[in-house]
Length: 315
Image 1: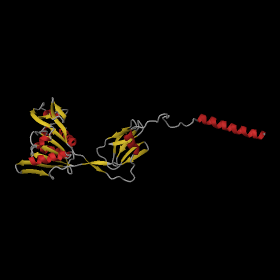
Image 2: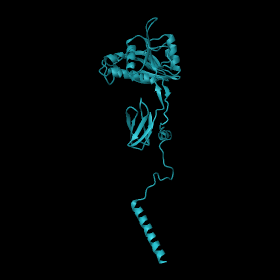
Image 3: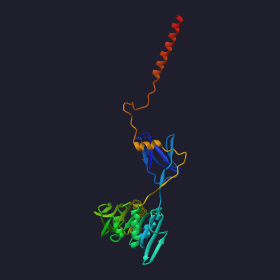
Image 4: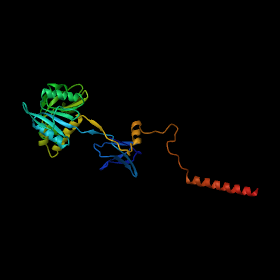
């Protein structure tokens, strides 16, 4: 988030060291802009006026851990996240004692993982590790049924009967109506995020320091493969949004440069609000005297000087 101070109505051009970011029209003494990613110092310009400041901190990107069983859903969830730029670890059970791994899929840890995605059943040991990870601040996305084991204490609710698809085709305006899902019966502290025909399909809740998003959909891969031309992008964006809603965010301080302008006016306006004139103040800068008044004053002084000299001569 970028905060700036500027006269009302001014158009402020924002850029970083690579390219322009946005143009903000100031109101009430300033404005704000959201820049998901920046490079180097930030610059704000109004005409020939220019201010420079550095980013104070950033979000460290952790890896995503996918756990559960080998399935089409797990395969295409991993594909969607990797296409969106998330680094992914995975451990998926193929048969008792046999697992398929990717990366370093150890026990989930906030030092390495931003979120864990559970697609299918996990062992009791893995479930306990996920529970500890979430309670220490991690994020989890739980797909499918979570009515038993350690994950039941994390879930946003119990899963009920399966709801059949409400459409035969993946329409761009409501593609998930063509997906079946397990209806979620949310807990009292859960927040429904998506409903369909009065039934909750996605819900979220806080668990101590962590966050959990539970989805009733367990075959979103059908949307990716059976939708229209925009289905692949939409499926990718949907899973990215789910992960982002739960992900653990580690803040990293960025070293400051000595010649940085810390934008003190912008920070002061953000902290204290728009300045207002003091009681009894005129509310503006002093006005310069008009040219006519200056000419009259100079003429009067000149006439007084001439009269003074004549009076001295007469004496």
